[in-house]
Length: 277
Image 1 (cartoon, rainbow, N blue to C red):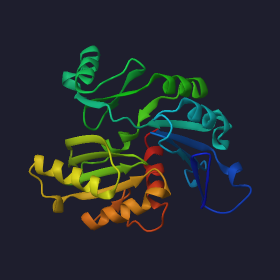
Image 2: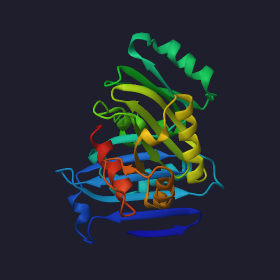
Image 3: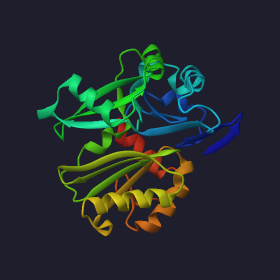
């Protein structure tokens, strides 16, 4: 792992091995955009994770700074061959889930606007949640989506949460979380029943624990009964995960394994997202 900080940006790199020829083995790439950060992941043709590149910037710049993302999308080595990019994911706290039986596109978008303040510079995208028989709507910056379509043409831009709505039928009270540099994307299922989904801000592990326990109280659920699985956008969130495990001792990575090395939660996220494309 390598990390460096420069001009208010922070970069982290994970390579499965130190090998100058590693980049030549990359055949599949996914891209994840979050507030003030971008994660790029390279896999082999057999879906072996080879490398993770994460770059973020401080909060002295706008949340979705167009120059930052434009620079990375053109300069990131993993995006050098556009055809290798198979999936793009973005995290938005302005979202709404509508059952298929009630879904009507125009009305659903109006409901999202009633619940959240959707700005004129944002656009509403949607995608199906097949296992939950529902549609996921989220508001994302127009300039960012335009930038992605210019660079990656017809590749769909999916919500970061998409992996949290797959393969939930065999788990009771399964809470899946993805922790980014500024937000938590959390979804709770009880077997195939979706109980709640939310993307919220945090500053420390205590904020996350408070929000989860508050939501459990609203749903008359004991936090001790929750099976909690957490992924992370980079190694920088490893300390948050360790602190969170004090509140939820059974916490695992998103693939159900014990969290050990600093990159475990990010590697789990990468593998789960790759299965969604």
